[in-house]
Amino acid sequence: MGFFDDKQDWLAEVFSMYPPEGRRSAVMPMLRKVQEHEGYISPERQQEIARILGTTATEVAGVMSFYSYFQALPAGKNHIQVCATLSCALAGSDELWDELVQSLGITRGEVTPDSLFSIQKVECLGSCHTAPVIQVNDEPYVECVTKVRLRALLEGLRAGKKLSEISLPGKSGHVVHERGDEASI
Ligand code: FES
Image 1: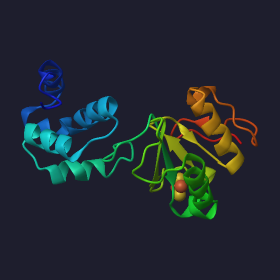
Image 2: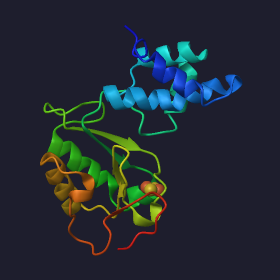
Image 3: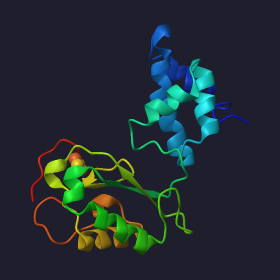
Image 4: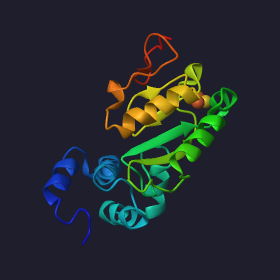
């Protein structure tokens, strides 16, 4: 059974937001729908979306590649993305990655046995001035991350807290902020 087979009303509503010639723009809400429900977007789902939109799975995968939120591999409840681009690498993101691998016992493409965590290296998240930066799911960034702050973050997530409920040590002022806001550290 296809993911969208029983979601025809939802599809019709989404398609109504676009002119017929712009129907392929619905790829974004469709990808988000699958990601939200299944935690990742398998090759089968990519093909299904392509078939519905009259495009190719390669095009769908191309769109996905621009957004680290969209996962092609199974993801945990908390999908932790570590920026590995230059500013963050110079500020210690490799060490943060090693800490995650060691602490969680997984690497890219794996999910912890309790389904709580998966990890991924991503390209620049656009907050280089607060490097190193990580992001959990599509939540606001966690910035100026140190190993101590990372451990506190994992502890909070393991306890079932939301990101906004977790207090991170080591910096005063804001510890997370919305994309594009000024950091206060
Ligand atoms: S290099 Fe990491 S946010 Fe830009």
